[in-house]
Length: 459
Image (cartoon, rainbow, N blue to C red; front, side):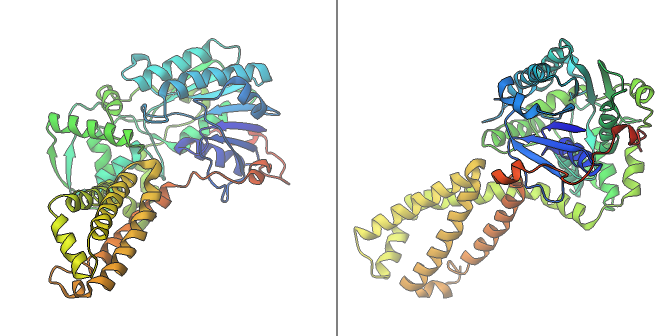
């Protein structure tokens, strides 16, 4: 079969795409920022579902037998619209499928959207309604919080919190029926079969419910760390953290802690998996049992340790550069001028040099904090740090032997910059492939396997 997967570079979409491609199907993956294919035999196409019209999508559906829509975002942010992805984009996709004659659509929604607790669930419900009003053979899957071996979004923040030796218990959180990612993938595979039932809304949930704190403690045990000290986080402080997450999102970062998350967590993510098991024959996997079968490796432990550290490194590094610029314009002005004069540089060149350096520091700090320009800010920070080291050595070499080591301290800053740059490179996995790569057909030389031959049982 030839299958189109939207949101193909996300947590669920990538798992679905690679599973289908590995089983011989021709997979076309749509993503705003397609990754390099790597080992996956997936043909990625760059497209933003939030801005796509049906006429944009129709050419992508040529020869396609079924569509799996995994596209979704947590909350509105610069360049991201929940209504655009969950409602307008879904409407365009449905219209394109109807026009192109693609009958089967598997749509990933979320459990509890009927209560419309936040713009996330409200727009998800609007998209569901558009699908249900269509003539397609649709299936709407509403999973709870999905956990897998890889980490993304909610599962990533839970792993980060699990690494803390002193852990906060978040107030006002509901219960979660964590669902294993492999079960969800197998569910999608089941409903892609020609003879599978259609026009169904199916809750996909785990066999038992967890509190958020218990789920975090489970992940900590999985990573073989001792029991942590715990305390109840004051409500006002948790509210502040969610608001801070919104600010971080406004800077272009995908923070998993935002007000939408709080609104959803108030109600929890629970439901009945009876219909799911009756239709598919899948026995929901117990998360604890699944994790016990695959002990955490050093990679998981490193990820968890670094996850909470990462925003601190990003934030403090950006603020550091802004602070150096502000200080140079203010209380550090005379110190800077005296050093320039000691190096033989007089007015007005000294003043212009300090103004240029301070302005550059502030711009670099802003560039680092703003996600779309963060990588360029890091490049600039590395170059200007090296420039400061060279110029300082030439003009005032005694700074190498100063007790506070102003020139010596540049090198730890450069190392921190390089480590921060590695964070940015790791995030930048969604890289636009070359046009030639986009045109290559996935799985060339392989005969597509039949979906009917794939097992339906999970866990």
